[in-house]
Amino acid sequence: MGLCRYDGKTIHFRNSGRKSAFNSRLIGFAQGLIEDICYRDYQANGGVRVSAEQEPIFKKALAAADAFVAVDDQGKTQLLAGIDSLDGILLKTRRFAEAKSVLAAFAARPNRQDEDNLQFVEAAYKYFKATGDKSFTDKVNAIVSNYKGYKYGLSLESQALAYNALLIADEFNGNKANLESAEKYQTNILAVIARGATNFAPLQALWQDGTFLVRPSALLLACLSHNGALLPEAMQAGLVKAIDSQKFSPAGLLGPDNSVHPGLMGMYALAKERVLSRDPKVNFEQVQQIVNTFSNYLSAELMARGTMCEAYSTGSPIAGKGEFANAGSVAAMMEMLSISMTKREPTAKEVEDEAATPAFEQIVKVLSAG
Image 1 (cartoon, rainbow, N blue to C red):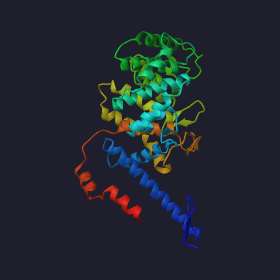
Image 2 (image 1 turned 30 degrees about the vertical axis):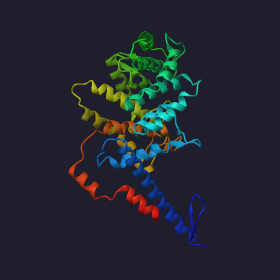
Image 3 (image 1 turned 90 degrees about the horizontal axis):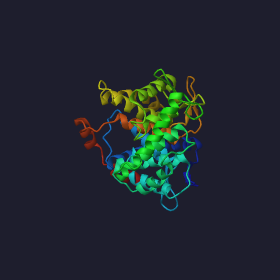
Image 4 (image 1 turned 60 degrees about the vertical axis):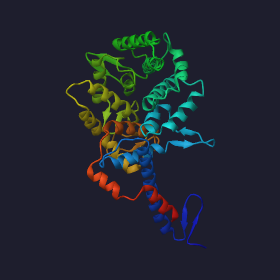
């Protein structure tokens, strides 16, 4: 019998202690290799240069996102998450061809729920902004045709998504054919908020004396691509302020189950950035610093686990809850990291270090040769 045996999953050594130690080292090596490959691919696809300080966490996030991307038996890319995670999992990681494949597969399957269809429109728009590709205009038009005029029975979140989708269709088509319909949704949303209606259970938003009483999903009113003018600026600022005081915690936002949900932080970061960017006293570097302050805790969690849970307890120390690896949480982390990074030229030391490092392809070749 040889020193070791490979069963397709594990290298088994005759000495079980050696097996365990070797497997631990092998897993660590493989994880590091995956992180390096994801990072090299990201840069090869035009990704921004990441500072030496941010590089470890960014590599972890790229690898964590990669875990939610698969290929089926026909060679087509599958996103192991909802379409609302496409931005963080595939676009922020600059995997544009795979993003297009996922969007095309979604577009080919009819009879989706309202929110899924409307989130597709938002994802298709973000894909367009990243690539300039309007391939999904026909699908966007088909979806928004169901929301022209005014569609009754939608929650406030879905109405915000419909408003957003109608304006996206107008931009794709270069006209204002849907503007009147969008304004009807806007009028109703503002009327519901003004009277403090609670029959829209998912939101239950109330604007009173400059204060919002909200659940975190209200952020959909302020963070979507074309929702910048949906609410008055003072109301958007009030919404973000209310989230800060009522629902914010270092690891995420408090959900209806009183657990902390990191997946909501992507919406929060986008809404926060939008509100702060209007303040002439706040520059973008300050916005980045603010985003960094509430991403630091999540960064520590990602560095420790290599992924992020669906939710966390509010006690101390916190404990993970729900899915051990959650696409929404990882996508939110990628969105926050994208805000905190800027394009910049490499420092002299980074150029020197890169020149002194053997080519990545050569490293892989040597390792593969054994």
